[in-house]
Length: 194
Image (cartoon, rainbow, N blue to C red; front, side, top):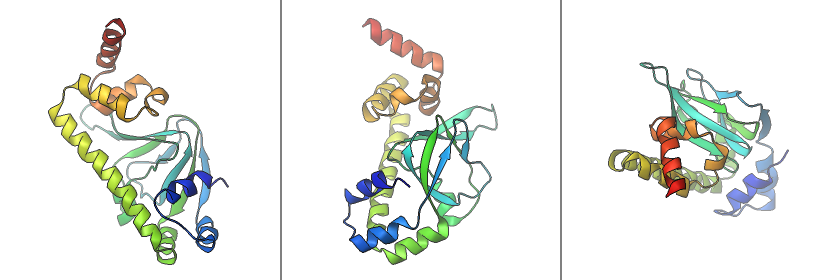
């Protein structure tokens, strides 16, 4: 099982002893999903926290009024993909997480996660830092959605997530930004000719 990238990610924030690393490795399972597979479906409980080893996932909500996908976030290599509310409360999720391409994740189930934090308390700090980063990005997205026009948000997305944009079809980026795919296409054409 390939836990190298996860351990490197953790070591940016905290240092684990050799004993802690050996113990840490026992808590995770690896899962590979094909393009279009669901990691989580609306109405199911998010039983695992998922670290993306490789691939791309989208989290989305289906708008009951028009049936459209509303993209909540993307997750690529070295990111996390879970419904935090569903996972922490063990309640049904209100959105889906689906692969955009073949994806491999490392998973830890809820009870193992609680045990992991008990046995390696320094991981509480790591997961707090990850959560703070996620919440900061969410706050920025809410503010930008309310303050800036779609063109500004599109270029900010490209600047903020340069590793995501090339891996995601334009229509998904449009959904994430709350605009039409045609609008994104016009912005791109306009800026190629500028």
